[in-house]
Amino acid sequence: MIVTIDGPAGAGKSTIARGLARRLGFRFLDTGAMYRAVTLAAKQRGHDWSQQEKLAELAGQLRLDVSENHVAVDGQDVTREIRTAEITNLTHYAANNPGVRAVLVELQRAAAGDHDFVTEGRDQGTIVFPHAECKIFLTASPEERARRRAHELTERGQPITVEEVLRRQNERDASDASRSVGPMVAAGDAIQVPTDGLSPEEVLDRLEAIVREKMPS
Ligand code: DC
Image 1 (cartoon, protein in one colour):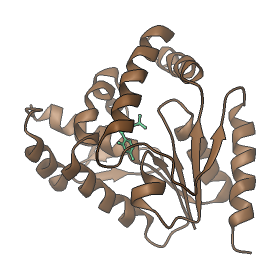
Image 2 (cartoon, protein in one colour; image 1 turned 90 degrees about the horizontal axis):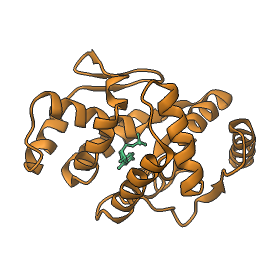
Image 3 (cartoon, helix red, strand yellow; image 1 turned 45 degrees about the horizontal axis):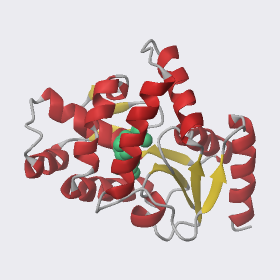
């Protein structure tokens, strides 16, 4: 069974998708980590961001390992490095690149294989797994998302104000929603779950109930 969780940055997708996979005993894939890893690898190689085709070529050559808790590129552990503000701000080059998306979409389908799978991103229910048995679109108000993200970054030793997160988040939302390939949009058959005011446990309870209802008995 495939469960897709899409939605904007800061809606809680990562925590929730990971927790849901654990509760269900399914494998888990964080597809944003793949766009981040391509971005980091390109930056480390001194990539010229105006060269779109070169970036797609590089994505096709990299060995990406995205496991439950670690991300590696060509054997180098980059779990922490892909989460810096600099990489977050550069990732739109990879995310808006059709060639990069084509490479990563294939890797995502291969990772799912025949497994029971929870995958999170922007285009999982629309482009990557249009036949997924259960599709969730997780949302929260921009202010709530910015508050959560500022808290998370500050906890991680990268202090930032809610206003600054909100400004960058608005830019990213606009970029994610408007790209011509793989835009962030809810699949027609996705269940929308607003998470404002809910604890992660409450969101997980809700999603687990939704998935279990759709499970073949
Ligand atoms: O979820 P995240 O913040 O780690 O995602 C990083 C970037 O990658 C973000 O700008 C959206 C983009 N992304 C995407 O375009 N498609 C996906 N399936 C996942 C993430």
